[in-house]
Length: 100
Image 1: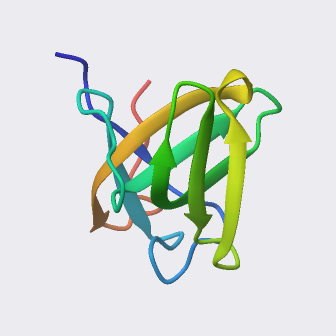
Image 2: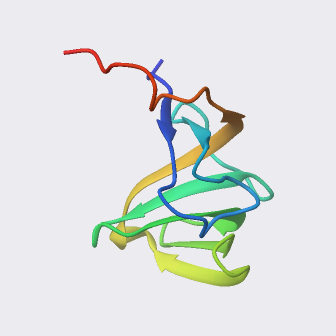
């Protein structure tokens, strides 16, 4: 199994689904299905979060939480396509020292 990762947005583009003080938990172990929340990273470096409508071998169709707009992306331009298994509010890390 692959390790879970997290995504913390730096702005409110995906609010109220996930806000800068929250962490979206990304699970690469499960194939997203229609109705799932998904994290999508494009080869351009752009990131989007939304609700999956349909995914085929050639396209991914979803409703972006950034403006609630339907999007369709070619599978060839998607570098990361993960299921969001949950969103968690994390503790304030600004007051804690970072590890070396």
